[in-house]
Length: 180
Figure (cartoon, rainbow, N blue to C red):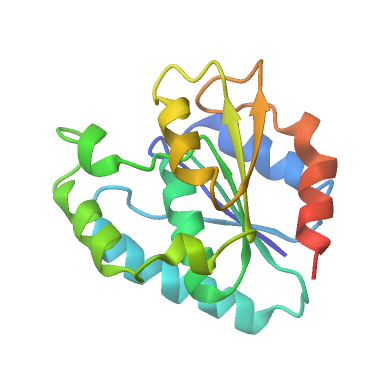
């Protein structure tokens, strides 16, 4: 099973395309939609939904994937639920760049500081970060500096922020999903 978390633009047709592409790895891909506007509520909802899906499923190697804001959540929810994570252009600093787009962006900072101390150290090698060199929305060099000590980074030279085409990375994602 693969759980897919959309980014801030939940209505983007690219979400459906990514779900279809992920089905080449595993036919059981579940899109979990969340508000994107209420961080603390979103965290509770995502934890509950992902836990429910894990309880219903029988996959020994579940995976959670997210793009942009969905990458922020996939890393944290995957860690808390014990799943491997694949994050595409994760928005690691929504408390800085979501102001004016959501009600309480400062809640992201609160979540980040109250989650688990040193969670990336505890999550070492359980997350694969795929970053675009052409990301027009985020500074992925900054993201890489935060993630590199803990996770493998794969750079994509063609994709934009929304990462419409994940197909070039499917074999690597599949291999990562199946690691014990």
